[in-house]
Image (cartoon, rainbow, N blue to C red; front, side, top):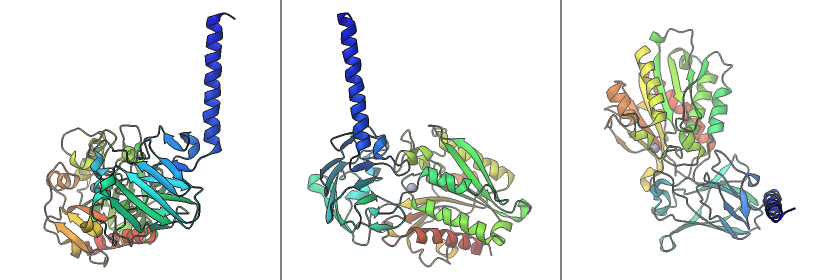
Length: 408
Ligand SMILES: [Zn+2]
């Protein structure tokens, strides 16, 4: 073996040992599990070094997650392409905690709207779950502007806990829910486009296809343009399940077109407001700057050309400060939305604006360019402490009933 060859062999051996070492460390496990929950990443998928996670962007926790002790953790928010102001989405799990109070310091929060506004005990800032089904608000939180951090303290009733800003609702879960309905004769699921990163943008149509379209109201609903605005996903899930299980007028008199994941990449990447290239989809409905919007808009134009759209809802989850705890409707266009949604006692309007907005916004585009009345942006307050998964699903039923009452 000549010198060169020996040197090369040594390098190869060192590399192999290093790779094996990393693999072993990954297998052995650590206590930090970053993930965006939409693409939940377990420890085995992440490279770790002394409990410091690196190399994964989806968590929005950057590469600075660190464990100080079994009950103290630190991390830094990783800004998304649209800027740090909206980088609210966080989702991670801690495990092997000791009993007692756990403290998590999240750094870089001064510039993040959702973490820097006034602490109000009626609002929730983060939630946790021990079983992935039941969520509870984290009640002890402090905005520590001096240290540019948001601190949560909680005595968790389990030693492996998942913590997130809002209720996680994965792209995969959205897809599974609508594709599960495909055997139903009142359902059609189609792919209307693809995201920049190649994920399907799917639409579910629900109606009694035997009833002539001329006899039906055409209702179009779009959600998750802003990926971190998760509540509408639970509401739409509730709507779909209610319509299909109740049938009758909801199938005979309506044709529902629902695009439940209009920004698949943003959801996958754990963004709050951005599409994968940093575009705010909701302000990109004129021009051709956004790949996802172009395809969804073309589909809506086609629907409108065939069967005039009667009702358009762009569904969001409002994440603002103290005023964001109820429901906010924009683009009511003279309709009284508290009346439209009158079967919903919980629909307490913080504010509602009749301004339909410019055509660059989805609701404005529907109102101005397609002539849809009403065309509205609906926001659910994501910080209401009273939300449960069941409550959000029930809201889907109530919203469906309200739309039916509107046409009665
Ligand atoms: Zn939004």
